[in-house]
Amino acid sequence: MVAKVKKVGLPPLNVAESLYVTELVRGLITTNRHFWRNWFRRKDTATLEYPDKRRPYSARWRGLHRLMLRENGTPRCVACMMCSTHCPAGCITIVAREHPDPAIEKVPASFEIDLLKCIFCGFCEEACPCDAIRVDSGVHAPPVYGRDEAIIDLEDLLSRGSQSTAKQGGRNL
Amino acid sequence: MLELVLIAFAKCVFLFLAFLLGGAAILSWVERKMSAVIQDRIGPNRAAVFGFTAFGLFHPIADGIKMLFKEDFVPARADKILFFFAPVLSFVPPLLAFMAIPFGPPVAGREWLMVSDSQMGLLFLLAVASIGVYGHTLAGWSSDNKFSLMGALRTSSQLFSYEVGLTLSLLGVFMVYGTIMPQAIIGGQSELMWGWLPRWGIVTQPLGFILFMLASIAETKRAPFDLPEADSELVAGYSTEYSSMRFAMFFLSEFVGILLVSAFGAVLFLGGWNIPFLAGDAWWVVLLQVGAFLAKVGALVYLQMLVRWTVPRMRFDQVIDFGWKYLIPFGLLNLLATAVVLAVWR
Ligand code: SF4
Ligand code: SF4
Image (cartoon, rainbow over all chains, first blue to last red; front, side):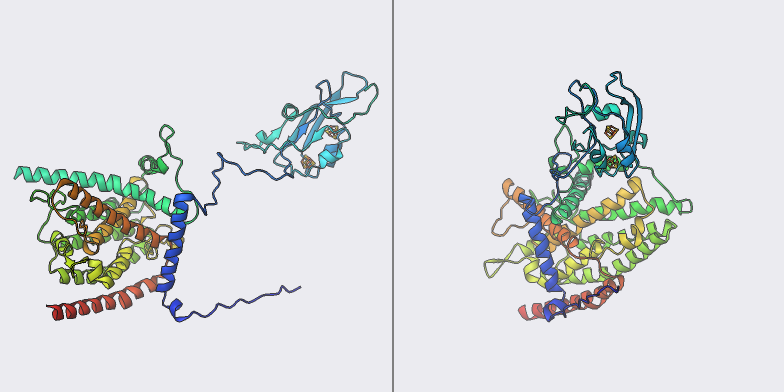
């Protein structure tokens, strides 16, 4: 398909414009106006002084992942590997271990997410059968000095966690 | 004799401190702040001393300290002697030229507010100020860098072209007031025409003023005539290879140059320290007059900055074209018209 090219011709200059001087004066008036408007009131200033003032994030903003907790404060995650299997970026690494409670099969021994690979799609949240992982903390991914620092671990994930009201399945629960 | 030398020395030191360490540094802040505000930004406001930012006025100090601690780099194949000498040569002349600028009226029969009211007057200023071009040219020549060399060539051809226009635009003023001594010119401008109009240079020589402003912007090598350092083409022109305080000297010489042409313009076209309808030698009158002079310099600096941040850079052939085909003919025309009017008037 050939893109349609719209040709925009330059309008011919009239006598005053081609003299250059009139346009120069007009330009000076414009910059002068901006100067005084911004000098006293910052009328046209678009700058947001970032670390001091922040723009509110959109309501759809997800932020960092977090792992939710049971009523007794232990992680809800059962290390089923659904999220890591489904993750399109392949950035979740889970090592499972036995849960002391025989009614719950497994619990993650380690749960790592590589934030440099993560695309914050939220598929892990969708895939999780027990509302254990959520991508809704609203915390911005922090700047880091090295690649390994961008990997967040179980402790970090749980620190943002809270109790979920969703009913979790399993025997004796 | 010794007394005279001491007084002159004190005046020089004061001038140096006030105009170099004060004026030029503040001007670097003014430039950054003004460009920011014109472009709807905020500009420097972060450097703080004990939590005070003072509108970013500490930035020049921070810049100076940073410059001092930067590596002083010299290209391996540079001409060492000229390379070291060039910044000084571009930096001292505009400072010297301030000697001929009167900051206020004579107090108690003596020129306390001017370094020397010599017979050479403003010719001295013109002569000294144009030495600065050697500094820039040598800087480009000695750095062994093609960008620097291009910048140097552009500097010399541009400054030589506009020197003519600048001088032509001033001749009219010299003719009208019949002198080249700055105090005498200001004295002439203090008179009133028809009893109400101050006989300022801008009134008697309006075309001369416009030509002077154009030529002086070209002389300070700033947009739209900033071809010698054209960042987008030549990296930084003649100062490409310079770093640390050596670069700062070029940087400051540019700002001292702006102050110089503004002060020069204020003396010649805006009546210097003269305030219309106010005369006398009470101390507060003198103070007001010095204030008026500084305000006029400030106004001209503002105009220069406004032009610099409004107009885009011209092409080099256009710059030279403009200098030779418009500025000089108009200067000559102005001279002719002045001569005719003066002949008829007398
Ligand atoms: S948000 Fe998407 S990319 Fe990130 S861990 Fe979850 S599934 Fe993977
Ligand atoms: S977070 Fe959810 S999906 Fe991922 S392993 Fe734990 S329980 Fe399974």
